[in-house]
Length: 368
Length: 79
Image 1: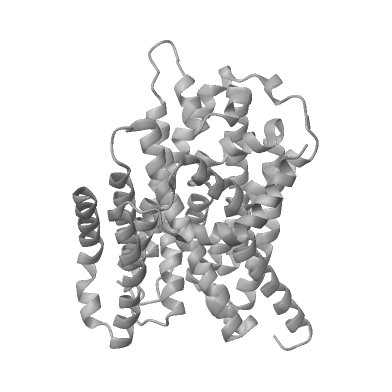
Image 2: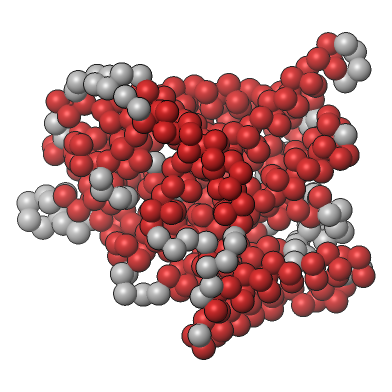
């Protein structure tokens, strides 16, 4: 195992990690609330969020160009000074902890609501946390290599469902356009920009791990992968809207519900199980990436010599959080659908955009 | 309750078993930082075992940012 900070990934591996992170758990969780909030115009809200995500990515890449060897928390210190950066970093770490616990809880909820309803949730939560911790222990290179087949199988399963669902779709389900004005569309943008597009700022922590010789291509790849993530989510949302109509907003895990409807010649049925496995693989990849970023940022913040020392403690805390946080489904939906996008915007996006602006002004004045 | 204690123990062992040598190699300062994580772990562990409804991390988020988020979403939901 290489020492702290010297592991590197190629730009292709960065792309795999990035797309796994962006569509991993959002494919399972985004369609249902998006249709609930924005109705027929969910696709439009998502398209706008993708464009906003591209703008945000511009800020991330600008800061990376200015501070190519520093991780996010280190260049925050350079831009804001020790104390303000310290406060921002603590809030950032708490946000990551919450995010990891939400993903773990979401995997548990998916299993106990759909495929294995009688199994206690702690089985899924503990397994997810332990496997994610061991993936992070293995390092970013191993994760990037391991996620390639997982991502491939996930894409294949989703593509099969989307193709088989085409005959079930009805275009009139998308009409009328803007039936209740602009506010539902803004609501959809608020949600989808917070989850998953706003979350792309976390890749500020991963970017310094890209090999020096291929760094100049990183921007192009990340823009392309953001567009791909937007396209994939758009496809999934359109499929659920066309197939389920207004019901897509009421059915939790709507892509799974679409899988249930598929029946080809009375023999190709029960495809929802394949979708379920693929979607869980996606959520696991996102969980592992978030845990890696959380562990790395915490180790930098505490200035540790061993970057894996805190990993078990962080993972255990997140497991306990996932087991104790919510008493009801409604509470969890409120946390993810209402509060989480604003947390991402205030704790993640605002400090990053301000840092980019300050750096730009400083460089303009010749002090950067 | 016993079931929850066993879940905690097994998960804890699975997570910490691989890092015993790391802890042994670490400096006193690093061990203090690691020990500080014992506080949230003990609190949340007790909460889980006792099945208590105590203050949690998401409550802090909901109590602060949650208020603004609720107002914002309420406004967005008005048609």
